[in-house]
Amino acid sequence: MHSIREVTIYWKPGTSDIAVGPFPEPHNDYKPFHFTWGACNGEVHTDDYKERQLHVFIAFNHIVVRDGVPIDAAHREFCKVKEYVDGLADDVPGSHYRREVGLDAELLSSPSATHTIQ
Image (cartoon, rainbow, N blue to C red; front, top):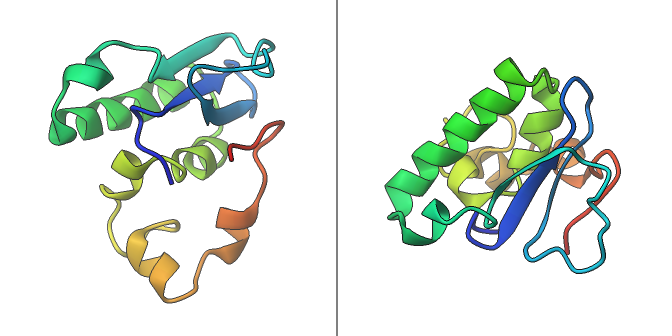
């Protein structure tokens, strides 16, 4: 799991194409995606932790509601972002508690639609 300061979220509206990848992106692997947000944006480097966490949840909302990315695809990828997981309730798939008790192995091991982060 990585801080949003270390990764960028890449997505293509209206599809399940969403990925969390490194920043800076070294090989143009994410070129097919239309939008980005995360470490490529200045505010995540100056915000304190709670502000970054709020921005992550706002970005999730925009990506799902405004851009039409399916919620399950967005959630799967956002579960790679520490600020997102830290804000999940214990009974939400991908939460710290469910990880600790061995639930959600399928969600956490599912590769992203087209990319994976190391």
